[in-house]
Length: 312
Ligand code: SF4
Image (tube, rainbow, N blue to C red):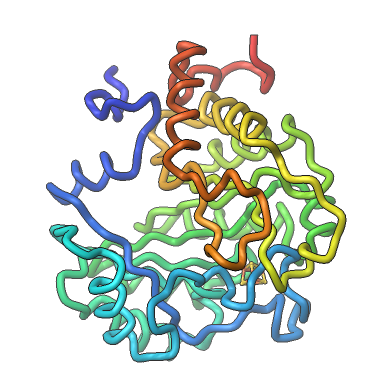
């Protein structure tokens, strides 16, 4: 059977290829701030947030974050996309926890987003412990009218790492969320962070292997960023080197099923506030190094799926 990314020029299933096959051209995701908070900030579960979370709650690239959704959408398209001419857009509730509000408020926000010009879908970032039955009912309503992707900020499957980083959610929360989400007509994209304090490369690869086996549709991988003003910025912490990061990502790609879309292989730290790792500013160089390493190994996404986590 042909791999779903044959013809893409990549050794993994790149997001651009998936979008082109699905929508017939280039699609841009537009990050939005829906005015949400997070149970790890409002006191329900915690107040300080995850140790790496910036004041914007991961929404550092949103243009005009306090404006209306339409103004944010238009500002992003004007400021960030420039001459780029996508055939459509995916409004993306990126900041904080995009399902953490009463159902009627979720309905109102999601409806506004779906009505934005040339929107072809809806993406919502949330936590594994914020996808209860009432949220799933709202997601199902919107999945009947557009393509809905739920992005779960899992980061690691290891509860001791999650506790060390103050995440206040667990693997059991993820399993619980997936038991509901996999019955909905929505796509699930899981975010993983490589280089969380105290975690080994083998644990990071095992996180990828485990989430890849949960019936998900996509992943985002990135290195832990130390950002000014976060709890992590005041702690002794040693970042992964670029070489270590590239090697871990290639190991993860080898154990992810070939149908899982790779939405991201490296992140963008917000320019002025990024303390480390400095190499993450060179996104193109990181991506090129991943391509080179996969070619050097002669490996493709999923090639070690049936084996252990170690390379042979
Ligand atoms: S769950 Fe997300 S928004 Fe909430 S504190 Fe952690 S990183 Fe920040």
